[in-house]
Length: 116
Length: 115
Image (cartoon, rainbow over all chains, first blue to last red; front, side, top):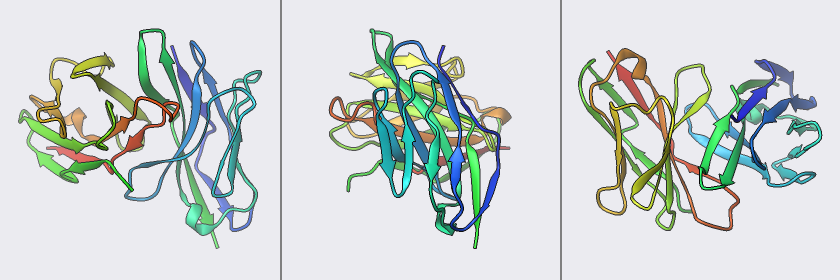
C-alpha cells in the first residue's frame, strides 16, 4: 500500500531561520506528491506539488523536489516568517489502473512554530 | 475564486444519533472525497465518489457511513449511529477531471463532537 512518513515534530524556529521538513514515501505506481498547509482554525490548503521525478514545486518561498531515487519530497524554506506557523502535511496520490481515484495519503503532519 | 464550502462548521451530537455533514464542491468538479482528522492525528481518507457512485472507500467507511449527491450540487456524508470515536474534523474535497494532476481542493471542515 501507499504511505507517507514525515519527520517528528513539532518544529520551533526563530524568524528568518532555514526550514527543512523531511518527507519520504512508499507507493505502488507513480505518485504525484503534495505539501498541504493547515493554518490554525482553517482547512487544508495546497502549498505546492510535483508530479514527476526531479520536478521542483515552489510557492511562497517554499520548495520541494521530487526525488524518486530516495523516495523523498522534503520541504524547505530559506527564511521563515511568523506567519508560516502552521501544520504542514506531506501527501501523495496515485491515479489510474482502474483501482485508484486520486485519494490522498497523508503523513502525520508537522507543527511549525516560528517566533519573532 | 471558487471554493469548497461545508456546513455546519461545528456539530455536537449525542452518541447513537444520526448526523449529516454537508458539502458544496466546486461546480465543475467531478470527483469528490471525504476525509477525517481525529484531533492531533493525521488526515485519513474515508471515501471517494465519482459518476454518482462510490469509487473507493477505506476500512473506516463501514456500514454506519453513507454518501450522497442528492441534487447535483450538495455532497453529503451521513453517519447513522454516531460513536464517541467518530469525534473528528471532517473535510470534504473535490477535484476536476483533468489539468490539475490530482490536485484536490478542500473545504474548511466540520468539527463533529459526539458526547
